[in-house]
Image (cartoon, rainbow, N blue to C red; front, side, top):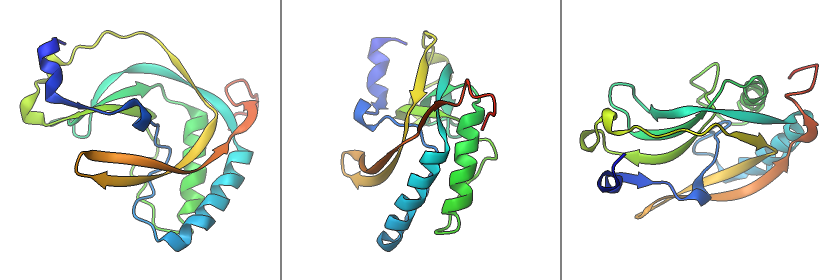
Length: 169
């Protein structure tokens, strides 16, 4: 990717990088303590796990992508954690879980589809791993300068490594 093309992207600040395990959406404040309580219990049941880098990917809509993702390989522990969160949180507040198998990813940039051609997005790759050690409950705050996230709570996953656990989650 040429340096002059970089201004076409709205790069996500590193402090906003995260992997969404479950997007809950707009929620009544009165429900947040119950959600926190349930996430705490779930975090104690699930082990830490490793996500392995797969690729950089254009995302949102295949015909008209709007984001660049750092995409990770399919992960059974990630899917199990997502499924548990969906089943429990859905009992508290409506959850829009669109995929049976969520895609672990980090959004690193957003762009307007008319300003960037997909062939301009050739990014060299370096294999990497990411250790998932905790669940964080974030609140999205919309500002004139873009989205900012606020961590409401964080919960440590069990210290066992799910990738080496013979029971597999």
